[in-house]
Amino acid sequence: MQVLGRIVGTDAPVTITLEGGRIGSISTNGTPDDAIGGDDVWVSAGICDVQVNGVGGISYKAKDLTVEKVVETTEWMYRIGTAKWCPTVTTSAAEVATQGLRLLAKACEESENANASFCGFHVEGPYIASEDGPRGAHPLEHTRDPDWDEFQRYQEAANGKIVIFTLAPERDGALAFIEKVAATGVIVSIGHTGATPDRIREAVSAGAKMSTHLGNGAHALIPRHPNYIWEQLASDDLWAGVIPDSHHLPPAVLKSFYRAKRRDNICVVSDIASVAGLPPGVYGNTVGGGGVELAENGRLSLAGTPYLAGAALFLDTGIANMVAYTDADLVDSIQMATANPAKLLGLTDTAGSVNEGKEATLSLFRWRDGDSKLETVATIVGGRVVYQS
Image (cartoon, rainbow, N blue to C red; front, side, top):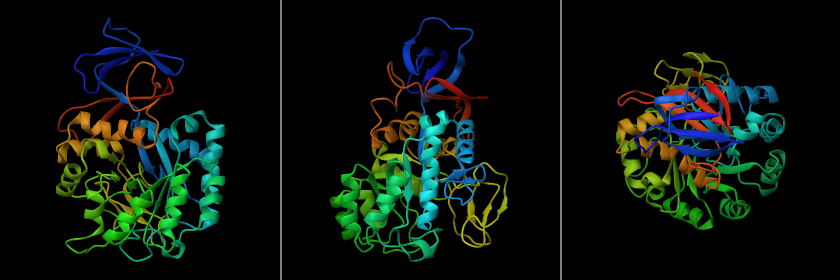
């Protein structure tokens, strides 16, 4: 199979030959008639999103989740050019979380798509702040202190595939828990926290490596300085996950975060909830007791309130917003959605760039300056065309 297009960051179209699930060669000779793509198509490593809670009406922690529904989510993600992601299980009762993790792991065993595209699971909560504001839309009744034995049960259910674990470091026992989890190779991420700056520093010293959706899952009002947002922005040891959907972070804040953390330390994430991809409207009891409302502009809120309840815009919009609202250009923005997640997750030997010998997982798209999102042309995973427009 051959792919024709311009690799992001280069000028001239090339022909990329895929062999055995990898990139066999990259050549400037000729224009094959049967190649996927075109002279006006950009090619990047497969777009990777490390925080995806669900899509297309399917939640990864739903009580009625099945392996078939998990596999169905891959089709939704491929349509918008996301080739790899971390299915995310959020705060819930232990039996609900372990069921979701077990089904995700089983999907990897039974589905070629899931096995190739799930680059590990992200568990967000339940060891997060219980207070309003930092807790966000997570259910209060299931927030709790860290429990090492429970974490091991989660990891067992996930068949060892948990790669990111988000918690609030101010919870009782959190620092010792962070040390233990980090020692297993799992990325500990700080999120949904109201911690003091001192506690943020202690969490980093204990092994925390990331900030989950920095600037969100926070109090509406915090001290001007010091505070937990400044402390995480200033830390050279923390990756920053940011949601560039224009709802979670205003453009000026997004630009400031980009300038503070710099391109090499940011992973853009969607944080999409299960209603992503669905038409605008109010959707059932998906969060708490009142459901959520999806607006025409993609803003997702607790129904009847101004409070955000996750996100509903994919990274095809988020990548474009980084270009529109910050100092980033397309090359920078694509790096934050490809090479950076690969580096964070330790996948750079196989993924994250378009080079000979690398995994043939690619996102093909058209891009015009000023557009609100990428126009997906094709998604290729492990040398297989899983979506083509």
